[in-house]
Length: 440
Ligand SMILES: [Zn+2]
Image 1 (cartoon, rainbow, N blue to C red):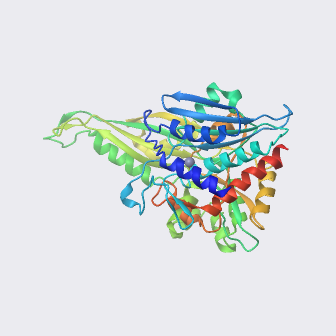
Image 2 (image 1 turned 90 degrees about the vertical axis):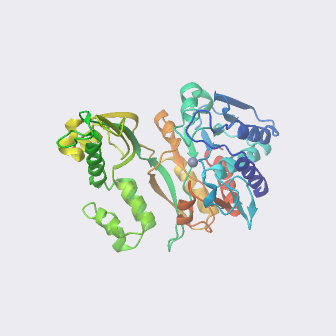
Image 3 (image 1 turned 135 degrees about the vertical axis):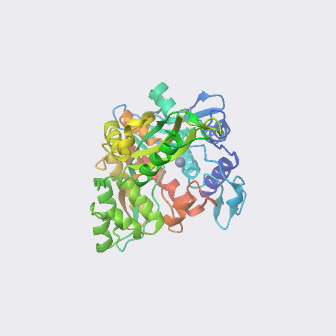
């Protein structure tokens, strides 16, 4: 089966479905064509849903015999983020296979899973799998932007075609070494977002006499500085605790990683990758990312807009974030208007579910002595739409032990993205066994 998964993945990489955030990008229909052709050979009923020209989503279903039995959805996205080819040692869209690895943008995010889910699904169809609960395969567009033309569109307009009680999508499942056997992180939740524009007001004037003027750009610089310096409170939430205790960094590190009074200090000492993760997982974060303002070199600006990417923790509401902003800005709060333009509350699924148990059993058979640990991702995935619709949704997959957590983290949206064929084989077996375990 690994030959089919390798071939399909290379094909999806070569389709170069780059999502740059514009409506005209992505053109995922090319990969829907490839997947439809691959799955169509097994006589499966396929439905294509076009949310925008060229931005299609593909659904395949194996209907269950018992309408009351729980249903399972395998969801993979077909789009990828842009690349800078200068940083790559090989063609990012070549889909080359070198020394047992498939190279190219999307190899770990997440065309590897989109491909292996399709291979397992076809395998199940070919063997005449007749589950009690329905199994759905979904290839979605637009995950790498906001999911507008993919998961969100489908749940808003085609809910009956895609909704399932249990959903599995990216990411997780890399092996974290432990004396008692590898720990496999499962994404059980994700942070929320509160993207906002802070409009800083001033008074226009002639820039030839700046003394005692009210310059919005100077005030905006101070707003940015205060946001960068702001120290939000540390939250040691349950998912973080269970992750640290499960992965087990040793008694000293465990204690420091779970101490809300000193974690921020400890983050100063940790290796950079872990420090950023540990900090983001346990704090609301404020990242000023865009600034616009000024009209002319000789005019004191009266309006400057600062855009801030704020990521929120489980349980936080808009009012909590507004209070933190007021705290961060202090006496400048009265000189600015805060306008949120994209708000998503954090979502999470419980771990005491039949789906969790099925994933644990199957993984343990495929990766000797392994066990699952829950993890909160600091990014966003399409799982959030399904959690809000009522599904239990996890991010998972399996990787061979060749892929370390550091490699995985650096390849995500990074250079020289690639995956080994053994990982593709493991994931294919995971999906196949999971469908049997949960739906039979
Ligand atoms: Zn992804």
